[in-house]
Image (cartoon, rainbow, N blue to C red; front, top):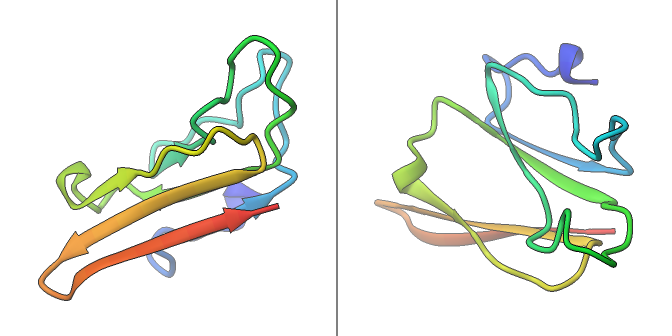
Length: 91
């Protein structure tokens, strides 16, 4: 799927039921920051069913992860001249 996401056409991608490798991570990418639910990897956490991809062109100073204690919710907040906007991926 990452191969089909052209970073020149997209800034953010919302993915549900992502492929996770045997160490429980989505395939890495040189053009996307992969955002997992806040509890991803915690002992006893359910399988991650939502991720958000943020184009690495965005400065990490312009967005932050919104923590949720649920493996089905991934959220970020974008900040800029427009104010703030929250993006949620709810499985």
